[in-house]
Every structure is written in C-alpha cells, then in structure tokens.
Length: 91
Image (cartoon, rainbow, N blue to C red; front, side, top):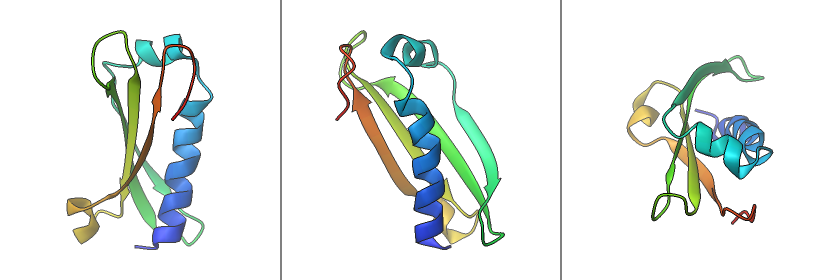
C-alpha cells in the first residue's frame, strides 16, 4: 500500500466532514460511511468513517477515519481523525 497516497485520500474524505457543522455531524452519528476508492496510482482502497461521542452525549464528537488496501493492511489500517466541540472548535 502506498501510505502517502492512502493518507491523502483519507485526508480528503475527512475534510468533507470537517466542513460540516456540529449539528450536521450529530445527525450522522448512527451512520457509518464506507467506500471503495481508486487512487491516482490505480490502487484500490477501502475507506471507513465513523462518528461517535468522544466522552458523553451532546458533548464533543469524534470523527475517525481508516483506510486500507484490502491486503494485510486491513488488519492495521492507516487512521486519522478529529474532535469537534459543540461550539465548532476542532482539535
């Protein structure tokens, strides 16, 4: 797996979530996003995004993404994410 390519794909997907408001992301809590994507090299990747409360309901939201190529890397995917506070602060 090309880690640089995979990381760029995952960052692009997470950017879509970072651009949404807190209330929009709260609506997505019960949904799980999964997609198969092809990178510039032609490699195929599986991307998964999950949202959940970081500590307590109606508090901070954690958005976690993972990516792998379906091979051995599926056991240890690349991950990235962020935490969004109700006031819109991202950390």
